[in-house]
Length: 354
Image 1 (tube, one colour):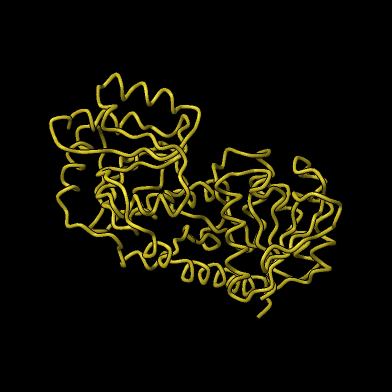
Image 2: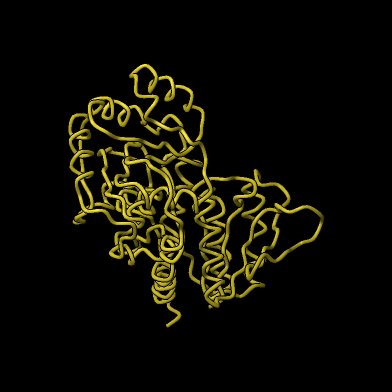
């Protein structure tokens, strides 16, 4: 299948979860034999109009990643020339979705928008609403985000959940290392809510445990000070950002992964940690989809406050040890890429190609 991936910004100039998801999807599609071209702003040095990384071709539409309308206006002709079977477009900025739709009409190809983010941002309300109403299909990473896009006006039948993925072979090959019992991993920003975990751990200071906080960000100093104020800093390691294989090794060694962030479109690190055998303990938050990952799973516990969180950590620590959870195979990359392709085929049917 010839797939045009539209993303004004790439991880090279906008290292966000949404940009990484788009780039990863393009790479996984290409790795599995699909003809993939990413239409983006120029992120590489030099003046070449295009370049190839692995099996993915990148075509520069504009020089500037902060000019969404210029990008959107130049996009339709480029899509017509590519002649795709399907157009996969990131939701941010929404202007590029409108440009992709016009390109889809010219090229007779369906448009699938992958909405990964808060519906309040970016762009005007009008462009956001059009960006979920015009495409043949809207892909979301979780039911929570699905609710958001429906509130913007997306048709129920057009919305499909395609989650983030894990590489189960990578999990199995990660060397087990570390002595932490409890792990937390996320960017340490205003939504991280590490204080809930620290307060819960402080209630367990009479027990034997070691905790690991993976990640960096503007709130790290504050969390480290809070751990010191609670007199548990000698048992909580703030490791900063760790390479993926090291993170996986630490997850395989640990027993419990705690998710407390107040905002999460998809709890990616929770998924990796559970695949690596951790019991997932999730503190419910209205703007987080993390609880969706542990629903109906034996190795998952949902809590609603700090007291329950402490109790859940103790309960999770008593579960049988496991360093790979094969029940998460439904989230393996091969399966999830297949779900993307199925969405493209459904969009083709909606567009009237079959």
